[in-house]
Image (cartoon, rainbow, N blue to C red; front, top):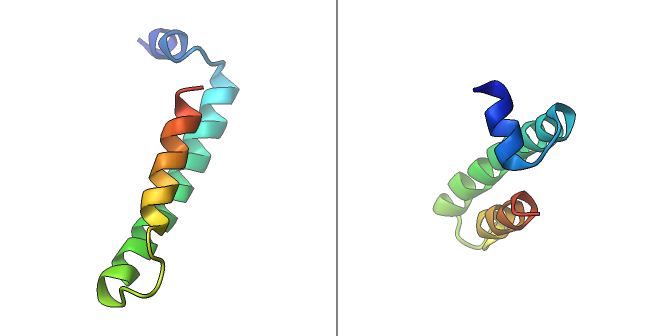
Length: 61
């Protein structure tokens, strides 16, 4: 099961680890900015949307 996912993703363990680990931190940042944006709409407009879009593009490469 472990190797199956890596094979499907077309990544080595360390490539996968690096992307997943960084994506996790970036997504936490996106979540925090989104919460702040909910209270003060002029702060962080479209930030979380741009982050998610960028990660989606990177994950498909």
